[in-house]
Image (cartoon, rainbow, N blue to C red; front, side, top):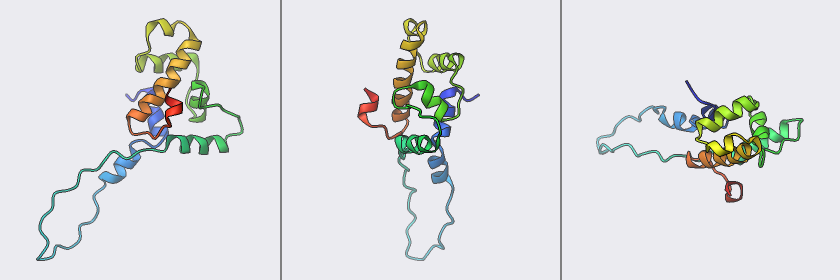
Length: 131
């Protein structure tokens, strides 16, 4: 089963670029002079997370502050942003137990953890959003 973080990545287009890169292209007819070449490794392409989120925010009638609020970030992606869902996501990402009991602390930790994990998976996230 895909976790909530997997849903966030899917909504932002993670994996789609890799899937497109993995689609085999029709091979050109070999010529007599062509030497066989090893396939080039495909680099992990970056996903423009900020661009996607700003695009979604521009279309959304609500003024969602996804840059600082995990609730708004989840709402923008049409994901369940209830406390139960956020606790599930926090558990999935390894939130420290002392922050789990305080929803405000958990939300701050969770927002930062989600952005850092997106960046670690090839998301293009500006440094100011990661600190």
